[in-house]
Image (cartoon, rainbow, N blue to C red; front, top):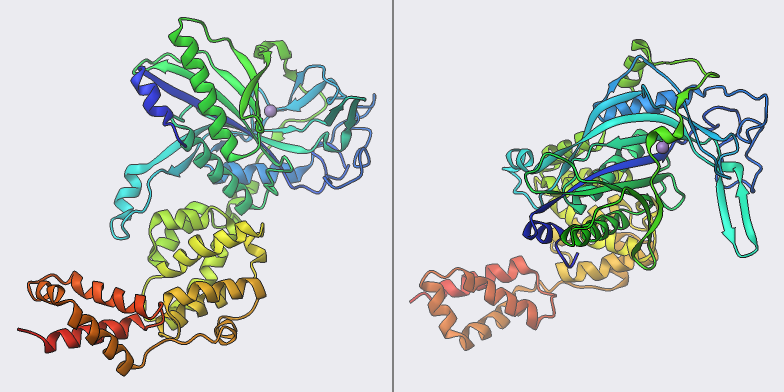
Length: 507
Ligand code: MN
């Protein structure tokens, strides 16, 4: 980001206060309160029954799978779970809500008082990482997790508006975060972590484009050091991490301009236009009491019993946090790398498989090289080809094989990039790609010696520096050899040769 919001606010004596609300669709087979299937690909208005269409005389029946998935998220975010929670009606009229109310949880939600921990630092040293992680990680509080239902979807065009009821009644979890966020970056880190947790748990498809994970952003400013919160606005339905950061930044700057001019902030609902990158006023926000919440008379209280919770706790999969710590310990990589690699469940699995294969063959104790290859080359090419890591043309074991080939001196580091590209484009093995490219590494000692010896002859000043204790000169000579052989020389052999020839010229 070009401008630093925090710096601007600091200069003016203000601080950002931001809290996020996330609506995530659960990947249940059927809807929250009826047996209609949840199917985003179904033809319009076919994945619907009388309950989702709000026909008179129909009654909701709660889908128990929703409760199980909700409890798993509550456990994964350290929330307290209420043994009894209740459904309420939130009343408002809108064409995408045929019943005239949304079933949600208002007075007593399923769970409250949890948190998600985010890691703010980068590139930590491997040994010191545990200490540093504590200093630069931050807990973002979760106020509550409630179960509710999605609305239908309207599409507006010049010829009129259309309604598709397929989405109506799809189970949602609303995760209300505490206003603990002080920078746009913290917001996207929190969202990425929450998203990763949902995907690791397998409770949501987590597809942002399909609207499985939508975020509302509450933003206010306050004078630095003040306790009292300023008036906040809400920006609705952001569906990318980048847009969340952008919307927070724009809204904070808009509020700053108003405050500096002595004008009041109005409690409002805004939308973000991702194409124009600007905010638009949707409406002056209704107060909570306008929704006339009251207990849902057609549903029993929700019972989250100890036995059920214990059973779910037992089958909880390894979560990003735990996997991150395990990667740092087992594969000796930095916690920053581990955070990137565990941000996506499939990416972590790729890294793990590649590293196990690599460490079994290499003399190295750390899988740092594997982490680097994945984060730099693999992710770049996957992104350029719009592929998921699950569909990577280079398999984890073949990536490990490629790194082993470099270590064995069969190819140089520079050649390896070319080999990788060939493996990626043609879906072939590392050895196969090397063969096809007919790459050779120059490790003929006589040839390297000849080049090195000529170099030493023409650089007497560097030789003097070397014997005056400047070890870096060795790197200079090796670099020159690599340059004159177009990267083909085996760097280890080049280094050995230079060292040997230098010793012969010791004054
Ligand atoms: Mn909601």
